[in-house]
Image (cartoon, rainbow, N blue to C red; front, side):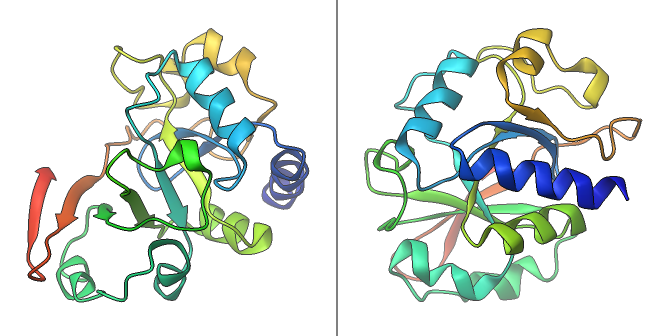
Length: 189
Protein backbone atom coordinates (compact mmCIF):
# COMPACT_ATOMS: atom_id res chain seq x y z
CA UNK A 1 0.00 0.00 0.00
CA UNK A 2 1.42 3.39 -1.04
CA UNK A 3 0.53 5.18 2.23
CA UNK A 4 2.42 2.64 4.35
CA UNK A 5 5.42 2.82 2.00
CA UNK A 6 5.33 6.62 2.24
CA UNK A 7 5.17 6.48 6.04
CA UNK A 8 8.18 4.15 6.21
CA UNK A 9 10.21 6.27 3.77
CA UNK A 10 9.31 9.45 5.69
CA UNK A 11 10.30 7.87 9.01
CA UNK A 12 13.68 6.81 7.62
CA UNK A 13 14.25 10.31 6.21
CA UNK A 14 13.18 12.08 9.41
CA UNK A 15 15.34 9.85 11.62
CA UNK A 16 18.32 10.61 9.37
CA UNK A 17 17.76 14.37 9.69
CA UNK A 18 16.42 14.76 6.15
CA UNK A 19 13.63 16.82 4.65
CA UNK A 20 10.30 15.55 3.37
CA UNK A 21 7.74 17.10 1.03
CA UNK A 22 4.34 15.95 2.23
CA UNK A 23 0.61 16.69 2.07
CA UNK A 24 -0.92 18.20 5.20
CA UNK A 25 -4.44 19.20 6.18
CA UNK A 26 -3.75 22.57 4.55
CA UNK A 27 -1.13 22.88 1.76
CA UNK A 28 1.80 20.68 0.77
CA UNK A 29 4.54 21.22 3.32
CA UNK A 30 8.25 20.86 3.79
CA UNK A 31 8.89 18.94 6.97
CA UNK A 32 11.63 17.69 9.22
CA UNK A 33 12.26 16.57 12.79
CA UNK A 34 11.26 19.57 14.90
CA UNK A 35 13.91 18.69 17.50
CA UNK A 36 16.84 18.57 15.04
CA UNK A 37 18.57 21.97 14.61
CA UNK A 38 20.50 20.89 11.50
CA UNK A 39 17.33 19.70 9.79
CA UNK A 40 15.50 22.92 10.68
CA UNK A 41 18.42 24.96 9.31
CA UNK A 42 18.20 22.98 6.06
CA UNK A 43 14.52 23.94 5.67
CA UNK A 44 15.36 27.64 6.12
CA UNK A 45 18.12 27.33 3.54
CA UNK A 46 15.94 25.48 1.00
CA UNK A 47 13.19 28.10 1.26
CA UNK A 48 15.63 31.06 1.29
CA UNK A 49 13.77 32.01 4.46
CA UNK A 50 15.02 34.39 7.12
CA UNK A 51 15.50 32.43 10.35
CA UNK A 52 13.75 35.23 12.23
CA UNK A 53 10.51 34.04 10.59
CA UNK A 54 9.69 30.97 12.62
CA UNK A 55 7.89 27.90 11.30
CA UNK A 56 5.19 25.79 12.91
CA UNK A 57 5.04 22.25 14.19
CA UNK A 58 2.39 19.60 13.69
CA UNK A 59 1.18 17.29 16.44
CA UNK A 60 -1.29 14.43 16.27
CA UNK A 61 -2.84 14.80 19.73
CA UNK A 62 -3.93 17.77 21.86
CA UNK A 63 -2.39 16.28 24.99
CA UNK A 64 1.09 16.50 23.43
CA UNK A 65 0.99 20.32 23.46
CA UNK A 66 2.18 20.44 27.08
CA UNK A 67 5.37 18.60 26.05
CA UNK A 68 6.37 21.46 23.76
CA UNK A 69 5.00 24.60 25.39
CA UNK A 70 5.13 24.24 29.14
CA UNK A 71 1.57 25.59 29.11
CA UNK A 72 -1.61 23.84 30.00
CA UNK A 73 -3.94 26.51 28.57
CA UNK A 74 -6.09 24.33 26.35
CA UNK A 75 -9.30 26.41 26.54
CA UNK A 76 -8.75 27.36 22.92
CA UNK A 77 -9.91 23.90 21.85
CA UNK A 78 -13.48 24.84 22.66
CA UNK A 79 -13.11 27.45 19.89
CA UNK A 80 -11.37 25.08 17.47
CA UNK A 81 -14.05 22.40 17.75
CA UNK A 82 -16.53 24.83 16.17
CA UNK A 83 -14.29 25.67 13.21
CA UNK A 84 -13.95 23.45 10.16
CA UNK A 85 -10.79 25.11 8.80
CA UNK A 86 -7.44 23.97 10.32
CA UNK A 87 -6.18 26.30 13.05
CA UNK A 88 -2.58 27.02 14.08
CA UNK A 89 -2.19 28.39 17.59
CA UNK A 90 0.78 30.48 18.72
CA UNK A 91 1.83 29.43 22.22
CA UNK A 92 4.36 31.12 24.49
CA UNK A 93 7.18 29.28 26.25
CA UNK A 94 8.20 26.73 23.61
CA UNK A 95 10.29 23.86 25.01
CA UNK A 96 11.90 20.62 23.83
CA UNK A 97 12.26 21.85 20.23
CA UNK A 98 15.21 22.85 18.05
CA UNK A 99 16.36 26.30 19.22
CA UNK A 100 16.36 27.70 15.66
CA UNK A 101 12.69 26.73 15.31
CA UNK A 102 11.49 28.76 18.28
CA UNK A 103 10.51 32.38 17.63
CA UNK A 104 12.72 35.09 19.17
CA UNK A 105 9.97 35.83 21.71
CA UNK A 106 10.01 32.18 22.82
CA UNK A 107 6.78 31.22 21.07
CA UNK A 108 5.90 28.40 18.68
CA UNK A 109 2.98 27.79 16.33
CA UNK A 110 1.29 24.42 16.77
CA UNK A 111 -1.44 22.75 14.74
CA UNK A 112 -3.15 19.53 15.68
CA UNK A 113 -3.65 17.73 12.38
CA UNK A 114 -6.88 16.13 11.29
CA UNK A 115 -5.37 14.62 8.14
CA UNK A 116 -5.06 10.84 8.62
CA UNK A 117 -1.74 10.55 6.75
CA UNK A 118 -0.16 13.24 8.95
CA UNK A 119 -1.59 11.74 12.14
CA UNK A 120 -0.22 8.32 11.26
CA UNK A 121 3.20 9.76 10.38
CA UNK A 122 3.49 11.89 13.53
CA UNK A 123 2.31 9.07 15.80
CA UNK A 124 4.81 6.66 14.23
CA UNK A 125 7.64 9.23 14.50
CA UNK A 126 6.83 10.02 18.12
CA UNK A 127 7.90 13.66 17.84
CA UNK A 128 6.54 16.83 16.24
CA UNK A 129 7.24 17.52 12.60
CA UNK A 130 8.01 20.95 11.17
CA UNK A 131 5.50 22.20 8.65
CA UNK A 132 6.10 25.14 6.38
CA UNK A 133 4.53 25.78 3.01
CA UNK A 134 6.37 24.28 0.05
CA UNK A 135 7.36 27.55 -1.58
CA UNK A 136 10.46 29.67 -1.85
CA UNK A 137 10.10 32.66 0.49
CA UNK A 138 8.42 35.61 -1.16
CA UNK A 139 6.29 33.46 -3.45
CA UNK A 140 2.73 32.32 -2.74
CA UNK A 141 2.27 28.80 -1.34
CA UNK A 142 1.32 26.33 -4.09
CA UNK A 143 -2.24 25.08 -3.75
CA UNK A 144 -1.63 21.71 -5.45
CA UNK A 145 1.40 19.42 -5.81
CA UNK A 146 2.02 20.17 -9.50
CA UNK A 147 2.48 23.88 -8.66
CA UNK A 148 5.45 23.23 -6.34
CA UNK A 149 8.70 24.76 -7.60
CA UNK A 150 11.31 22.27 -8.86
CA UNK A 151 13.88 23.87 -6.54
CA UNK A 152 11.81 22.64 -3.58
CA UNK A 153 11.22 19.19 -5.10
CA UNK A 154 14.94 18.74 -5.79
CA UNK A 155 15.94 20.09 -2.38
CA UNK A 156 14.12 17.55 -0.21
CA UNK A 157 15.21 14.00 0.56
CA UNK A 158 11.83 12.32 0.10
CA UNK A 159 8.61 13.29 -1.71
CA UNK A 160 5.43 11.60 -0.52
CA UNK A 161 3.54 9.90 -3.34
CA UNK A 162 0.17 9.98 -1.54
CA UNK A 163 -2.21 12.71 -2.81
CA UNK A 164 0.06 14.05 -5.56
CA UNK A 165 -2.86 13.86 -8.00
CA UNK A 166 -5.28 15.81 -5.79
CA UNK A 167 -6.68 18.80 -7.63
CA UNK A 168 -8.54 20.31 -4.68
CA UNK A 169 -6.49 23.38 -3.76
CA UNK A 170 -5.13 23.52 -0.23
CA UNK A 171 -5.52 26.67 1.83
CA UNK A 172 -3.33 27.88 4.70
CA UNK A 173 -4.62 27.55 8.25
CA UNK A 174 -6.15 30.23 10.40
CA UNK A 175 -3.52 31.51 12.86
CA UNK A 176 -4.48 32.63 16.34
CA UNK A 177 -2.44 33.68 19.35
CA UNK A 178 -3.27 32.87 22.94
CA UNK A 179 -3.27 35.92 25.22
CA UNK A 180 -2.30 35.92 28.90
CA UNK A 181 -5.92 36.43 29.95
CA UNK A 182 -7.11 33.29 28.14
CA UNK A 183 -8.54 35.16 25.15
CA UNK A 184 -7.12 34.89 21.65
CA UNK A 185 -6.22 37.21 18.78
CA UNK A 186 -6.68 36.18 15.14
CA UNK A 187 -3.44 36.84 13.23
CA UNK A 188 -4.53 35.24 9.92
CA UNK A 189 -8.22 34.51 9.25
